[in-house]
Image (cartoon, rainbow, N blue to C red; front, side, top):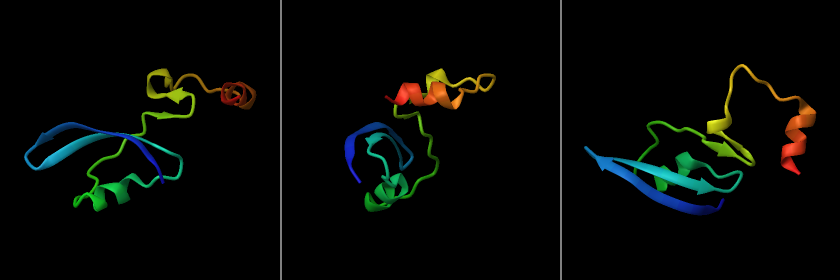
Length: 71
């Protein structure tokens, strides 16, 4: 597991909102537990070259198009 970046995005009523940039295989819930808390919600906003901003439920990439983005 590797944490490249951890940002405290907000804190209110005992709840911290964190933004993390982590390596593949990192268990974010384990990080929350190590910090003395637990994960209320978790949202992946990017993986490799794919970001949430590009998400379109009406468009599904072909395997060839997806693999071309990875190289």
